[in-house]
Image (cartoon, rainbow, N blue to C red; front, side, top):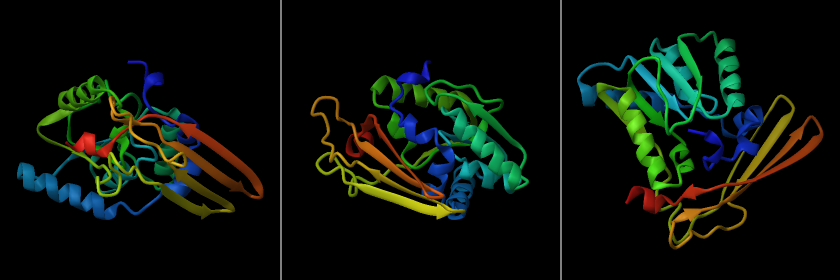
Length: 225
């Protein structure tokens, strides 16, 4: 498939270093939960994971550091380049890096865990895209594999109140603020798709930059219904 029509915030996501400053977090509790969840599900320890729409690939990098085989897949080559460089700095190997579309992909091997985190599945705004994604995941999972997706609870982002979200951070003389849904979006009553506008403001050693993006986002209540 041509990834150009996916509902992505490409002007934001291609600035991987700035994105990482705003969004980096400790995923160790999440990795521990995923490992325990798989063992409960399959009765054995997980040996491999695919971090889909991985961005900086926090989960893949930590799983690989713990000795698991890992794949990091993302639509943006800038994200894959950034994640690969960060893994190299950490002395982490054993990760297969792929620039690819979560609607149609073939991994180098079948994995025990497939993961989409941090609302990544929301870039799929059409029913056919979601089905294609599930089919691709199924093709690439082990027979006893487990697919996990993380999405915002409808309490915080719903059909009637999308909400507004802010993220930020600073590192090495660079500060980044990201405001999500500055346009106070309302879901289309027929498609149930939301088009939030995102603003990234950057102070890079005194140089000020502002980037704006607007894309499609499937409403959480519809996704979870």
